[in-house]
Structure formats: C-alpha cells, structure tokens
Image 1 (cartoon, rainbow, N blue to C red):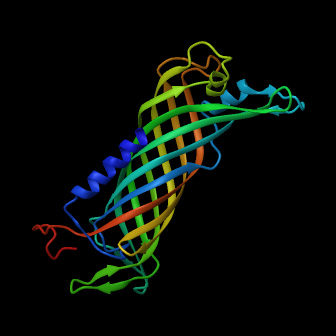
Image 2 (image 1 turned 60 degrees about the vertical axis):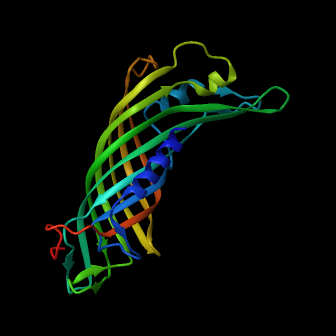
Image 3 (image 1 turned 90 degrees about the vertical axis):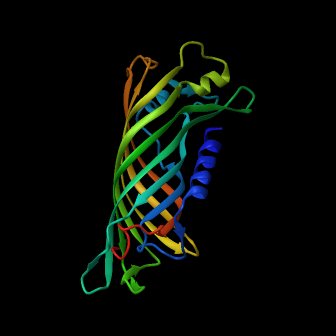
Length: 268
C-alpha cells in the first residue's frame, strides 16, 4: 500500500509539471526528475545484528542457522541544475553543479528457513522495519564529452557521471521485531516501536540518455542512526547505527526548458 501511494504521487507530480521535456539530454537541463528502485548488498548493523544473535538455532543436521535480511525500497529525487555548465580543459569535457532533494521508502524484510523434524523445511519471516526519509545535498554532473547546441551556445551531452552527498531525517518509521519468531508462533511480548533518526548518503552514479529519458545507476555508502520510541531490544537499548553499501537503478526525466521568465531569458 505504501509503495503504491508513492508511485501514484510520482505520476501525478510528473503529469502536473509545467516544464517541457525534450529528448537525449544529460547536461543541458535545469531539472532532472528521477524515479528508482534501491537495494542493499549486505544489510548489517542496527537491529539486524540483534536479531541475528537472538535467532540462532540448532538444526537437525547440527548446523547453526541465522536469518537473512533484504533491504529494498523506492526513491524519488529532483535535481535542480540552474547554474550554467563549466567547461574543463580544452573544451573536451564539462561539469554542472546542482542541488538534489528527494524522498525514499525503505523496507527491511527477514527470512529464516530451517529443517524441521522429518526433513521438511519451514520458512518463517516478515517485515522487520519500514521507514521513509527525506534528504537534500549537492550533486555534480560530469560529461566526459559534449557538443555545442543552439544559438545560445548551450552544452549538450548524451550521458555522463554524477557524484553526490545527501543528508536528512527518517520519518514515519516502524520497527516490528522478531518477525520469524512471530511467524512461527513462538514469541509473545512487545515487538512494535516507532522509528526515527538521521541518514547520510554519499555516492557516485552514471546515466545514459535514451530517447526522452535518462537511464541511470547509483552506488553509494549509507550511514543511518536509528532511535526507537520504546526499548524493544534490552541489550542494545533504543539507539542503533547501520552502515550499508547500496545501489539504485532509476529512470530520469530531463527538463531542458521552462516557461520563460525574465530570469531565464538568454541567461543559461
């Protein structure tokens, strides 16, 4: 339901935008609207370490099994690029500075499969936590090659690279601890708590213009400081920190021109 709501908001925002979108553009734009899917390569830290230490069980074959976790989500970012590109070297490449602001939805799910009596396998799990975050920070667009386009001398490029640092807050977060135990019916007690905190992302990316959209990939380091409303894990308390390497694949809509105002006429 939460993911469906985010998708509807993105579609409505895009449809209501008054700007004009044109084809094959990475550098000569004043705005990029990016919509993507994110995932973590190896979720760890925060409350995941606490869950793993509590869930270790002895299986029929004598092996110890810990639950696995999957961190996925949806991302919606807007890059504002009002500053004219800077040309580097001998007119062979250029970069552009901007501001990125966005909102993400995150879901961390837990799964544990173990061998039951008789050799049959049982699968238990569910959602460990979900939360939103808003983030803002600087972004750099770098084009290794470009062409001059238009009588204003605008720079046009069909692809390039990005680098960014974002910071923001977590909101509307929810921790639902011990999902595998609850799924197995062997847990009773408090397991729900509100979730808040701070988040920092630092990453690099690449994008390629295809028809009227940009297709891109981001790879970034993320550090999140969580705080729960209630103390669910007695050994770790209400605060925890997560360090992750995440990736994001996205589709971007470049906005190359707007309804002209005195500010834009002939100035970019």
